[in-house]
Image 1 (cartoon, rainbow, N blue to C red):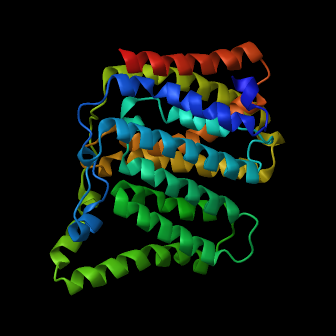
Image 2 (cartoon, rainbow, N blue to C red; image 1 turned 90 degrees about the horizontal axis):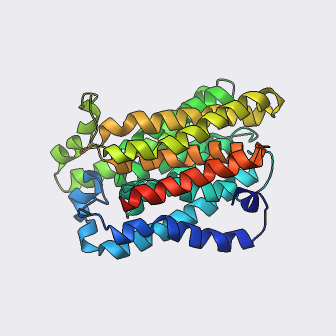
Image 3 (tube, rainbow, N blue to C red; image 1 turned 90 degrees about the vertical axis):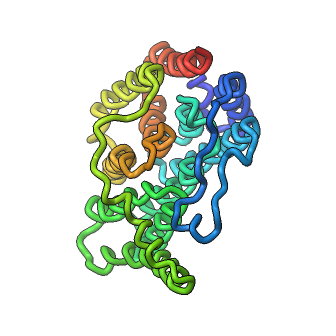
Length: 326
């Protein structure tokens, strides 16, 4: 499988669809009982009302999620190929993305985090582009806007905002105008919301939008025991990635090294922001899939022992199917 997707051929896009469909077949058979994920945060739902997954049949939710996941995988693969982040052009990023996006059942249904992943991929593209750009203030302003829009769908997405400053530290020398450009973009969205809330005399509701920031950090998380076991396979692949990166790190271009540092901090921000989620649900960690997919695709691109990398992916693939069925 890995050897097939190491080639950059359009036929791999055709193979990607049945692979993604097979990975979510367990969700079709064991349809999740509760599919009541909220699509809008209070910032929007206070004004527009809300849409719940109960208004969409479970089967339709899975099909829509499958379609969006494939599109996101192809889009992320295009961005990584554009910046040549893996050193070689292939379709491994798309393959690993759709695989990781199927790793647990809550990932396989339509949710606000799935929608935010489009914005996260866009943010990755924007932040990687500042390395070689001249005047980047417009790029950072747009990035702030994108993150603010994402918080309207899923408030913990606000944790991606520090990634703008982290990217500036990694890629650029200090320029105070660049540091405030992203802030201005973010504030623009909420300033417009403030005006709307003020118009409808709902200022108290506007203040309540920010209550998740006042929560204490939780000490427990509602995750099924089987979901811990399914993480064993990706953990092995990540360990292999670290070994591979260690061997090639200083041989890589400066841009690639810096980009991997940025992706690490984005992954860290995605993980620790789970405390901003009202119900501490597993679907939050779908935000971690994009950076993890890039890391694993790097390993599979540069791995030399065929039986090892093919076995590692086969273990991940079979583990996903197995734990969906039990």
